[in-house]
Length: 319
Image (cartoon, one colour):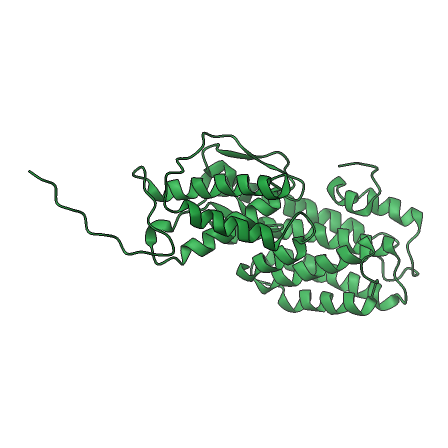
């Protein structure tokens, strides 16, 4: 008996991808493969942070496609620099060579996907457009601002602007301004989501009061003092984002979420201890005088984690 002809599918921005039965999985793997390849082609390296943001942008674009076969599941969670892909859910086809997203490169470790798909030209177009908007590593701020339009909490955008501001001040590309820092600190306090993890709220309020006190006492801030403020706020952010990723994630298995939850619980206790010790140092004690001296810096350095000390330039590490 002759087979009946299949009805034609509705067309979206690109024709439905052909291939194996798991068409949506095929599209996902093609996106991952071409994103890594296009970043190598444009930048000479597939930086982890750009790879995550590029893939997430294509995921968002295809999620709204009129053709449902362009849509695919992407395992991700919101973390330190926005949405980050959970490689443990991808079957070992990609790997990051460093745990820090900013320093990592993406390596393709699986077999190449079947590129005999009508979706390929559209994926390549989106990759090329992204790489043209954010060439090299000089436009991370613009890239993150675009990415954070999809952030789930206003506090995420407030922290992004704070972090970009203090980063520019420490780099020297922007004048150190007490007024600007106070304004962004106030935005953090206004947008802070008290209900996301209530056990962190008292720590954030204590830290905010401390930094506001430093800014209120200061007439002129030095680089070292801005570095300390950046490090202290990043310490909080790193702990906060562990709970943020538990609230906002997609297509991540329960065992992996349970492991993230265990880590978050451990870090919460450790962070509260570090913060309490830091706020008792001479420099951060509101009863102390103005300014930061070498003894105060060494005291803070003994409390804050090595990954934060790198921001302060006091470890001598080249990493």
